Length: 213
Image (cartoon, rainbow, N blue to C red; front, side, top):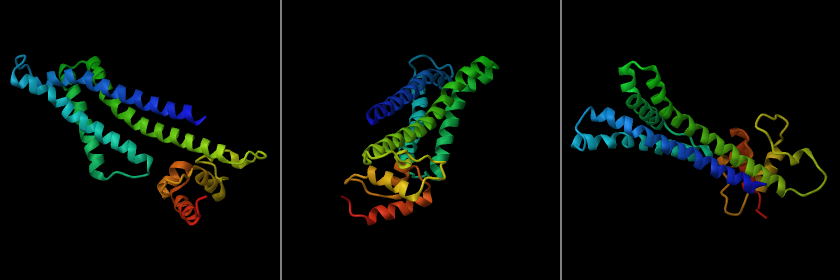
């Protein structure tokens, strides 16, 4: 049923972001030591060093979170956003591993490389997971909304790679998922049907031409 799927989506999102925040807490100490460079404890330089990791990591998290939301609506980010993401990720990685590379310890390099890389991979993965879980909810809702007549292939949710899914099949799924407060756009159609970009425009035009019941 759709409700458990929605709960799983929320749990996945919370677990991933909890792991990301724990990583921030883990690496703050290492970056602080890197930035303090042996300054006396509680000196101005020592205290200011605690701000370096959050200053970079919070910007990275903001970019990743924004990408996660916009990806659900088929909106692509510009080049500056991608550059900022890779720059902040690279800065976080360098600050975490610099001392390990300088010490020539492979174990320390691995230890301090894993957390920043996990942040990036997890944030990318949770975007795809939320997209697929959201599509599963929409597909299940569409199937449940169809008349409970004799079984037919149309009752199965269309798959992305299934060439036999017809225009009418996609239209049925989108029509069933449509609610009065929904603004039908190609991006919305792709989100609820997983159809191609070109087909989504035709489907959106067909839906907007209909009179909602």
